[in-house]
Image (cartoon, rainbow, N blue to C red; front, side, top):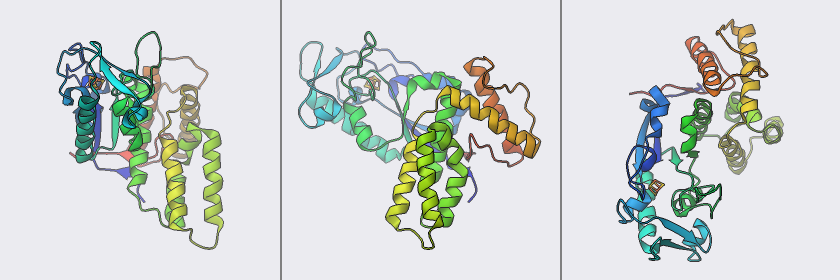
Length: 309
Ligand code: SF4
């Protein structure tokens, strides 16, 4: 199997993070501007559950009370606006309309705005570092649907974005394989194992032991077993990497490439050398470019994403 993904990935995004001035106070910001040329490598579907609810812009801010977004869908929590009006029905319709749009668009991932009672996933408040009642109403729907979720804040960090992109590309590439034989499982494992160890050594090692168990058996495993192991790999790919691990593996993988493929990239530093996020991202991208030129294999970013126009 070639480690290549040619399909242009589709990303849903909170509209207020895509430059639409749809927040309750009429504000919005375009965080995709930080992606530079990467912006054109995706098809975007911006949505806003609060606008789709019919509450308009500007509008009184809303609050989730009595529980989190899951509780809301179970009828145990409420959405009220600052004026005390109940907005349960409106926000339900808005969130479902957005979900329907994202499903129709067949998105591969969704970029959410953290801190909103509608869109937040890990916090629903932006005040004083409080978490609020996460997830929000729309966030809960996205979690229930097992969508690959990316926090919009990470679009501003070149390293964080690089980490999301390489994991998402690997995630989609695996999802598009039919894993029904030991041969295919081995092929996938050999390509993504280094990233998995980098994301979480313990979990990566656990999956490795399971893969080995399957591979050493004389028989083919059951479809359920292949499904389970594939899901474990996919779930680990959702986890952001620690910066320290990114730096460590960047260096180790570069040294390996230099030795085996003679790849030379200027200004690649050992993990203990202090440098800013932009520099680290440049190092990673520099290696990626050189590796792709020779059709080589970069363990940190194993799947080559070359979207067709
Ligand atoms: S509902 Fe979501 S997309 Fe709409 S303004 Fe709030 S955070 Fe942004």
